[in-house]
Length: 303
Length: 303
View 1 (cartoon, each protein chain N blue to C red):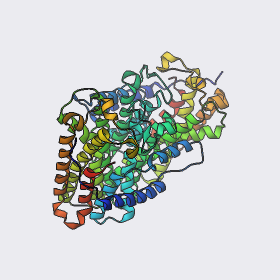
View 2 (view 1 turned 120 degrees about the horizontal axis):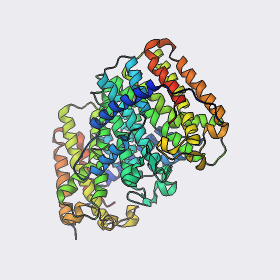
View 3 (view 1 turned 90 degrees about the vertical axis):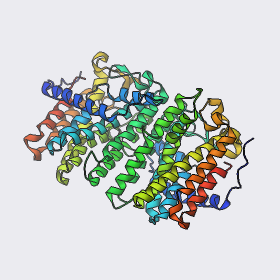
């Protein structure tokens, strides 16, 4: 039996839903369309991104942008780029050669709905489009700000970030690993992009170094807490509520904090990380309440 | 019988070989290494990039950089980023779900030497690293120049460039297509990145708009000529000389200029494009001779 989580803050759920809608609208505008021979590619890119989801990463990006007074149009573009990157990673992770998942957010995964070739290409194109959106002058007048966004994303997404995390995740399947390896794996696989999601708002908001470092610390702890709870929900969750197969981590021999330390210690660790994330926001006062609410939500969520 | 090509200019072959060596050294420096659990990823990235090849794209980038007096360290980084992008596209194109090729440059393809999951991730990481290298301040002091490089690459590589070309290429297999469709397909699939290879040298060299447009025109014609000859060599070539399977286009029902118009018309079109590419260089005088030699080499090459 795990420690019972606190009740979910319904105002955060409502905020997430409202933000998800704004992000979907922005994604629809940014994603290409075609009636030509390349149409399956564009359809698959839309399918992989416009299929719901919590939109935690763009929500974080937008909330931090808001804290630094970024105009909405710019903030939404940055948040959408982060979400494209996340969606590309899901499309490739779900492929038969990788995690071989057929169901995602209650729908057939991209390679099931289309085919493997189209899914690989749609992922490649989403990854590339994320950089294109960040580099576009519409995102910010300053080339220095835009290049900072591009570097942040490439660092979080690449061979020293998300892709390395996915590699390690595959490498340690069915192998005994320690907590330190799991923390390293998760810092790369999901932590780096969640951290950048928060940081991206500080970059486009031209935050000073101290504030940016505080946001990075917040994002890092939040990202790790999020992943622990994700693994707990997979271990304990209900397939219908989750909209995806559950119990898959154990079946696949995935290295998770839950598997190694057990659900009680895992939940306590997540709660400690969420408190730590909130402490990083001390300098921002009341305007950072949205971010504090997210940290609490992340550990109390049911799906 | 096709029209006999002119003799190959051996000085270009020697220049290509010397440049390939410099590019390999730069790639080795830029590619990450690891003794950790992520090592297969890094090994696969190296395997996919340090395996020879003509290095036409970085050669073009370097030759144009040279024309505009770019310091070698910067020019080599830009050229290496272009080559990383090209190598990622080969790794993904060779996958079983795509062109299903086992042999590339005389060696097992990346997914054969490693496995499919590692090959997909290595491609993703190379794509991301290309952007990272271009965005790095070491590449150029000016953020405006770097963002221009990033945008150029994302445009050439993404859903309106290379990835769209690959999608169309798969979509028209075993279907009757006209010359216009083939020109459109090839402009996207290989043309966009070859054009950007040349343009990247003009960007990092801060060329004026007129010179940059001339280089783009050159790159576009050269890229198309290159692809036609590639298809001719596949149709007529020798597997041992080519280091990869030949006759595969016809077998796979690929849409090529050779298949639609026949080898004679295809070769004449390539030669016309090469002449046109050389005409675009009229304003640069003798310093552009290297680029003129490349245009001639591209249509006269045997492998």
